[in-house]
Image (cartoon, rainbow, N blue to C red):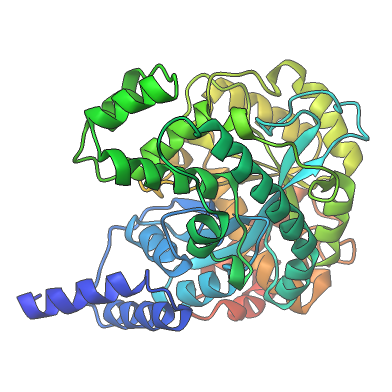
Length: 450
């Protein structure tokens, strides 16, 4: 490219982060045209990621930018999965079709396990006993509005709790000289809540992190203030990151430290208006042709994003957990290969297969430090997760128009086949489909079933 062309290209990339969705999608369309014209290339891999957060919950990336970053990193599939929101789904799917990468859409929310034998256990939600995150994958485009309506009361309840948490956070920082965080100006205004996005604890901590940076700058002074005013004992990579004033990920690294050490001091437990019973969430996912998946967390030794301290979760009672998941009706389990040891995940795989559940992968992206890639998927033990992702791509397109073609539909023409065989067929159909014309998967499914 000439210098002028390079400048124009950078302007298009920056437009993927524009405040207005229409501008972002115009940029995605322009990038797709550059690719089709052979002016923009990449080094593709077989990797996929079905669990990318966007600015519609908390992430550095608008949906169009998340899609482009995934394409740029060589991924074949990108999936948005925001907390308590599906508002990024339309943009994710449209940008993916423009850019030429397959996509899935869904959402993530906390659910209640209070009516199960695990009511008093720490499951996969670090902040609450008897609560568990659930990811609803593969939401058909025709049912996204129904999902928004389903999630609206959850968002309303969460926002009420968020206001109280900001008040509690302000009490924690009252003696630090930072001043108060204003919920409307410092939190709500920099979210996508007015467009159906959610506000999470990371939004609250991000507001505090921005305030700390504005008052103390970056580097040694921030570390000193955190240790003196907040009583934190920073060490290891977290201290190293914050000591570096030139660190391009400074905001997210600081946020991670605050999440690990300060959040417990002002966190308020959500009640039943915000945490719905797990069986009701699964039933809703089934009703819209989506796939409810339990996200395995596993015992944490070291968090890749620095936002979780070492703690024990499901590993001590994993067999019992899978009995509960099966009783609740979960069709799938999802996990993040970079977050766990191979031994942990092989155990999960064995139990998932034993209980006839689908395995789904995805690495939640909520920090600029994270890569969209998941190289572990290229290892023999995890390559089947790539086929699962492709099967989800087909499922999302098919079940929205013809519900009987969903992976788990009892009316499916392949309902009598083993799950592994159904995944193979749906995956084969999706792989043949041009990601710029995802609805053509219908044309390939019949051939894949032969």
